Every structure is written in C-alpha cells, then in structure tokens.
Length: 208
Image (cartoon, rainbow, N blue to C red; front, side):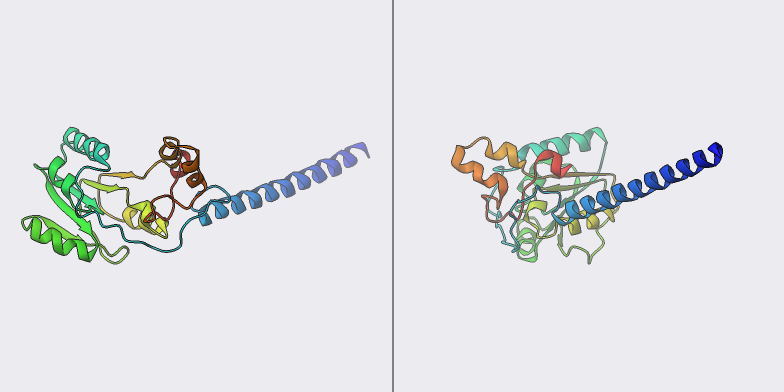
C-alpha cells in the first residue's frame, strides 16, 4: 500500500511539475513575442510610426566617422576587397576610408541619381529592401540606418539573406546620447527620439 501511495504521489508531483513547466514556457513565449512586437524597446517607449526622410547628401564626417574608421581597419586586417555600404548617404565616408577597395553604395533613388553624377566610376544601387539580391561582398556596412525605419526587423532579415563575410551595423546609443545633455533632454529616453527622422532608438543592451 505504501509503495502504491508513493507512486501516486510521485505521479501527482510529476504532473504538477509538467504543468508548471508548461506555464513557464507559455510566459516565456509571451515575453519574447512582446519584446519582438516592441522591437526590444522598454515598456512605455514611444516610437514614431511614420517615416521621415533625412537628407544628408551635403554632409561629410559629421556622423559615424568612428564606425567607418573601424570598418576600414577591419577590412584591411581581413584583406577584404569588396565593400558595400547600405544607406551610404552622401558616400563621403565610403569614398574617403575605402579608396583602395571595390565599392558599392546602396541608397534611395533620389540619392543614387546624385551619387552617379558625383562618382560615375563607382557602383550605386537603388535600395528596395526585400526585392533585390545584393552582389556578394566581403563586408556590408549599415551605419545609423536602422533607427530610421518603421520596421527594423525587415532590414535585419533582408541583410541576413545576403552573401557577405562580415556585417558592421551601428545605431546611436540612446542612454549615452541623452546623458550628455541637461535634464530637459532626458525626456527623449522614453521616446520619441529628438531627431525627427529617427523612429526609435535603443540602448546597447536592447540593441544587442
């Protein structure tokens, strides 16, 4: 009788553990789905739902200089030959830091037309995320592009399908950026971003 009772208790405990495990897994899935829906941003963060084009065709090294310096150093160490800059803007940094490389710039149609006039000997592709297959390259640079998009996941999935050896992707670190300003500026920590062309901004951990 005792043996039968012990077996029944063990079976009951196993059933409770199984039920608890199922509940934990359901909670985990809910949290993951919620994080994906929020693009891994904190609860309450306000993101924009409308794209605003940012024209940086007149800019040079105002932003992302360090990203391109790092990318160029990495490319030389890896003895890479072919570089693709997705969202290259004015292409000033691509041309400056990758003089000895084969270069491809990807931009919106309005920018590509101007880039073809400025640098007719280089390759320029009109960006149509999800539609075109990019040429195989050694390195893809995607510097401070993702924060401009309504659905950043689409960009990540698109880049993942391309043929490359290394991807260098950057975005402004929300907490670092606004910690440099006075208290009034810290309101942007919970969104929407101060830059009206940004739909959302992440902290390092969130972006990771």
